[in-house]
Image (cartoon, rainbow, N blue to C red; front, side):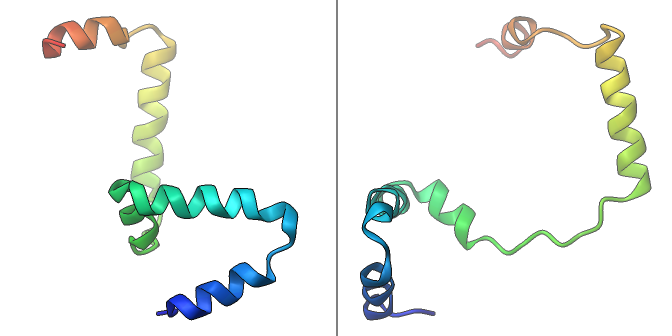
Length: 80
C-alpha cells in the first residue's frame, strides 16, 4: 500500500495540466465512501458464461418486443 509520501511524490510528477483532474478525483474519493469502495473492490474476474449471455440476449429481445415495463410503471409498483 502506498504511503501518503508516495502519493505526494506522484502528484509532484504530474504535468501542470493534470492537477485539476487529479484534485477532482482525490476530492471525490475523500468525500464519497461509495466511490472509495468501488476503487478498493477486487477486480471481477469471473467469466461471462454462455448461459448468462443467453439470458441477457433473451431479456434484450423481450424488451425490444415491448414486453418490459416503463420506469414510471416500475416506480408506481414500488410505491416510489
